Image (tube, rainbow, N blue to C red; front, side):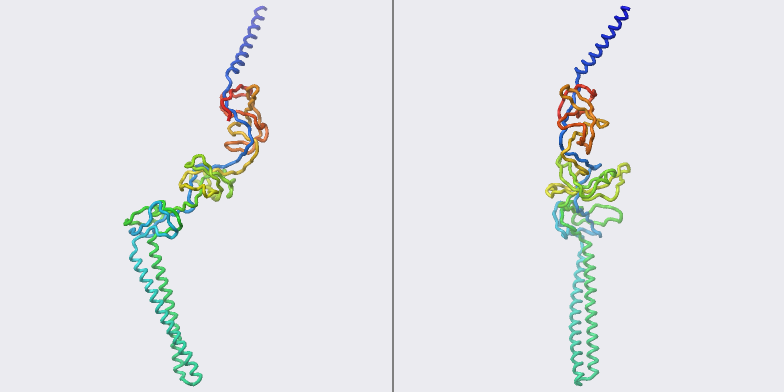
Length: 383
């Protein structure tokens, strides 16, 4: 009987020692965590591009000649600023220039012949009219009147024929001009020469049908820039033209630029079968933001779908599964899980509708080992 009581006492003591040891160990090793404060701010729901976007020029022309020949005139170089209609590139065309001059000379001759014929027709017309009046006074014969009227009609027909030859000559000039124009590349708009592929005296050939070759002249209008970016097909239905967006470029670090969606592509790209996307285009809201930007820069866009301002918010990374957070008890230096009701959310912040109050502190580093309800913590840093 004595041994049994002794055994019970010893067991009880051991249990108490174990419990005390566990309690002491727990208190001896608090978990180091990062804390963040529940605050008032704005929360946005946004959509971002799935792959890197590109800064593009609104107008870009890759120009090539439509016929082959030897380069006889190349007045521009890489980086030159040109005006609309300026000659950029010319193939040897002295034979076509001669044909053009011949057509112009023929036009001048046709105009002179038409003028002569029409003057003679006018003189014959007046003579016929004069004789007709004299015939009424019996001062001339019917035969002379008939001859004068016939001659006037003949001269009028000659005037019409000569005038028609002017149109023919003008058409020949237009044909010669078209042939001459095919040997020249002119700027379709004002811009900057990005690249010239060719040298004076070289022979160039036009691109075969269906085969893409290097353009002779690459012309860019850098005065108008926009960002083209691919959006996942799942997010695309929410994006509409006119929505506000933020633009960031790798070349400008963490600087953001205000933008607006100008176009959403009406079709889905299936270049990557497992990641189909829809291209969107975003304009810069401020012209000065485009200073020193070059077409081809890597760019990203963040389209704002919805936004709430003046609401309670916490970092999204502080939320546990099941919409819970660890709330810090400053008096006991412990944490306890609390349920929250969330609203608008993005990768950075989540709106809190209930469960927390402004100024309360919650655990940010929720991936730390040892985080359980009632655990003692040590504040490593407050965010």
